[in-house]
Amino acid sequence: YAVLGLGDQNYSAFMAVPRSFTAAMEKAGAKAFYPRGEADETLGLYEYCEKWQDGLWEPLRTASERAPALAKDPTGGVAKDPTDVVAPATPAPAANEAEVTATVAATVATTVTSADLVGVPALPACRAAVTWLTDAPTLARYPWGTESSSPPSGADQFTHEEPYLAKVAKSELMTDPKSDRRVLHVEFDTRGARGLDFEPGDSLGVLPQNDPALVDALAARLGLDPNAVFELGWAEGQAPSGPSSAPPLRHVRCPASVGAALTHAVDVTAPPRKSLLRVLAEACTDAGERRDLLTLCSRGGRDEYKVRCGDERPTLLDLLESHPSCAPGWAELLDALQPLQPRMYSVTSAPEAHGGVPAVAFSVVRFSTPRGATRSGVATNWLDGRASDPTFRVPLYVKKSLHFAPPTDVSHPVIMIGPGTGVAPFRGFLERRRAMIAAADAKAGPAWLFFGCRRRDEDYLYRGDLESFAADGTLTELVTAFSRESGATKTYVQHRIAERAAEVAAIAAAPEARVYVCGDGANMAKDVHGALVDALAAHVDGMDEKRASDTLMAMTKEGRYVRDIWS
Image (cartoon, rainbow, N blue to C red; front, side):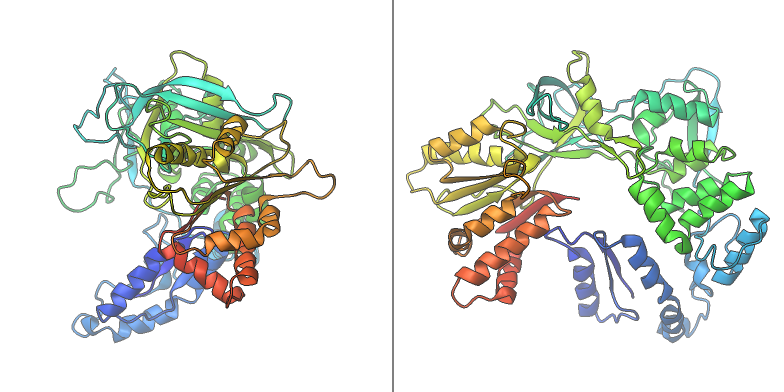
């Protein structure tokens, strides 16, 4: 066997599944024929995976030849060539990389060297077939969900497959209107709905919609009527064996209109995957445009892919407009696009504090790419733009947290670190702690919160709540870092941890201590982790950097050092 894991080292359970799988296989007597791969998104998934895959084929061939099961059946269903392992493609993939290069070069009718198009992926077979409907069938409901008090299936909880359609009860801007940051506090009216019980630390899953103007422009570029109705079935030879009647693309509920599918079912703004680029390349009639897309999805074009797709984040419409000859089939396009995923937002309230009303906080995402293109977050701009509409309904559900939850005993020491919107769940933690202190006989342990933002008069989120927690003793220490108030030198939460290192170390080293980190995983989480390691190493007897790191790792396994972060 061989295992390749994909993950992000910022998460506490990094590579837990592939490592557990490896341990289970070894315990059962299996032997790895190739070292386990651990691809880290922070270091580049594609680069690692391509290198790991390059070395796979010869060990796989050797292991296949030695496998006892092949003694009686030499074919054994095992691929004879590396490219046979790839999902079936149309046209069939060439037998090796050199042949792939030659095939591509011949197809584009352009003289190219093998270095130009190294490692072009095979064209994936399209799983779906489209049937256009001319009558007026009953269409699948979009947005999916119900305003009934319980899921139609009779399940106990609303889910992403059966969300609740909630009204927006309140939407409040928490940042200075003059700021270029826009952070909203949004409450949802879920009164009367069963199956939406939540606790501090849980998240609300929101099923967003793509921008209507973008959807109209896409339909026009594809030459499709947004009101045209279609059905999906399995393409010839693609249906799974057995009696299963599941549709090929479950996220595209049919019968559906083109506009509904583009609005609700598929992601048309995420950075394009190489599999999508490969499908779009096949749909180009212009040789130069085809070669350009093949280069972007090839291993030889990884640097160009990083700049043009990773940094610039083109939408599907951008790709189609920059390659005018590209005319993908509707079935092929739907199959190649990723489903439009729910967005998760930390609940920023405790049910006992607000009559069971769930609330979230989020930054409205708008930014410019290095080349000046403007990009907007799908869900946050949709919520921001529609929140004041009384007819607006948000498909949502509660996602329970397994580990990110406040201590159940108020005597346990706790440190919370949440700059920016990372402070959102800690508001709920502290509302729960306040209620527990009021009801408890035991003395409350220390509770520290490190919060950071730009300026206290610009984006000090939940300032009134946090200062109230500090005033009544719910918080024993509120430590703030305002990065833009100290001149040229920026001060962040990790600097405040370093300033209070001895006290932080004393709390974190206590047997029942809990440490929580929430927020940006690209930079903050790493710097905070380093500050915690330094504090423990400098101020706990017998500690050095390695032992401090081991201590935090042990706390992670015990559920006492928990990070809820995003990149």
